[in-house]
Length: 334
Image (cartoon, rainbow, N blue to C red; front, side, top):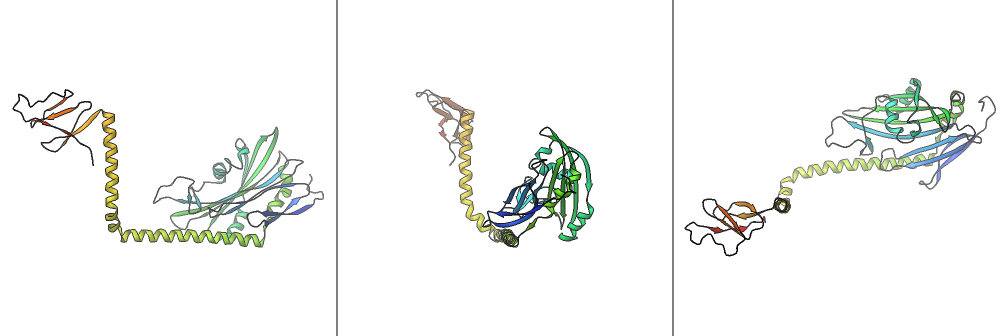
């Protein structure tokens, strides 16, 4: 479609079924194009909701679509080691990427941009003017980088081009780095993307959120931040209580701990005897334990440290001997 020809753009509202199905956002869609997608809530994360939509021209297959937004955090020294990808107070634990290419490879290729897994990057362009505008909106203390990555690939027997726009925001208030990543993408048949870019840009650039929906989102965001703050306070209070009552807690827990240790000793003792084919007896002369082969009915010991095991019920080493032989009893941990 020639962008110089007359075009009609229709305002289309996007409703959020999780917020009483109110109209949460609107955007302009070219006449005859289709709009799919909607709101996706993630209440356990600091960015609680993403609007993931795609606008497509059914004639050419050209489309533009938003990509997930996420907040990340990274601490060079962690008090408690955690796995990458852990939800840490609402942020995903992951070191910041070196550039947009690495961010796309790590976070978008496994998911919404799987079709670009075998593509070729044919052009990389930083957009400093747009990055400066974003920086002014967020605050000058945050570093912002916006990059356009053009991919070339084959899909469904046709050659395509796709531009992925990535915005990376970095904030390092101290030893912890907070960073954000988001973007959108537009694609068209090879050779058509530059010509269709003005049309494909309209839906993304015209996206606006409604007042009622933003008020609801900000309320949910406030509750989340308050819960995080409450959790931090509770953690500090718990640490202080533990420091104040550590000895009392230790004494209270001493009996429970001893019983658990004894139970573990009994299990280990039984396992050792079964696997080793041995039995443990108590030496009546020195009260020490000794391990002897299993399968015998009688066990004897003398003061010189000699041991006799026998299955003969009539055998008694004391008969006809002046050595002080004594019978041994099985030992079992208490």
